[in-house]
Amino acid sequence: MAKNIFGDKWTFTSFGESHGAAIGGVLDGVPAGLHIDFAMIRSELSRRAGRGEVGASQRALHEPDEVEWLSGVLDSVTLGTPIAFLIRNKDARPEDYEYLRHTYRVGHADRVYEQKYGIRDWRGGGRASARETAARVVAGCLAKQELASKGVRIHADLVQVGAETDPAKFTETIAVYQREGDSIGGIIECRIQGLPVGTGEPIFDKIQAHLAYAVLSINACKGFEYGTGFRGVTQPGSAINAISGGISGGISDGTDIVFRCVFKPTPSTPKAGVKGRHDACVAVRAVPVVEAMTALSLVQFL
Image 1 (tube, rainbow, N blue to C red):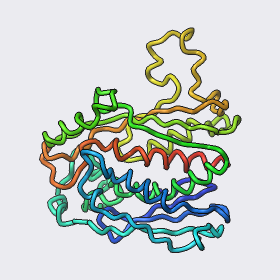
Image 2: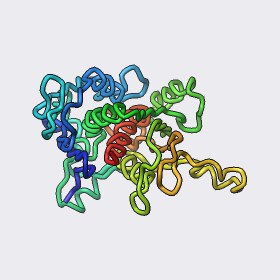
Image 3: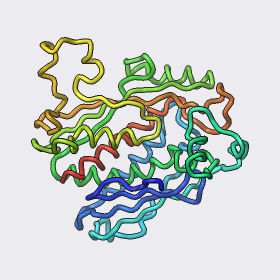
Image 4: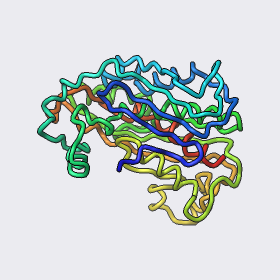
């Protein structure tokens, strides 16, 4: 049975398929009295869609991503009851994927889904599509607002595209791959500020373990590091032993927590002979998703 529920205190249940009628979620455990900033949610969904960015999927750019609030909210304030919301798929084109009924895309979950469940949604990957992350962003916005009320701030940035580390050159780097009908990966860095000292529990509830679990659940995410991370393997302990990354022994130490995560290049590209609407660099649109999953992870510790 697939697990579509995240968290045990703020419980987020995600539902819907990429080319179905809608995607959405149910949040339970959200306290009453939280004032929801709907403008922030619209802004975050726009970031996830990649509006104003080069190389974003044409589908993401054309989906209006209008959130319908079904329960748990009155006059922009949470009631303390389950919050249900949905986002209707207005620009779904399942016919674009008709050819996938009897074949599998390399680098996607097509084959293993069918082997595991005996059936799969061939319409753009179904639940395995990045379309599902729009619901995460909505849920994450509420978690970010709750955390902000307690002085906790989360901010992520794209810090590397392929081998390029100069942000001023990211756009052109992505444009080159887009013109070639190809794609490229990227690295996102996330900073958490204001988290109280002592957040996190040894031994199996270490804060970095929770963050890694949340972030690695995002489509195309292939690696997680904090503090010195993988780069520290080339340095002697005397040079890096004071670098904690904000976490010591799995517990926050009061300084900023900084982690990085890597996103692979989109495998479905025209150059690979795959039809459909795809991202030239999926990491661009993953930035707000990383923030959302970070917030949903941290809010569990409250």
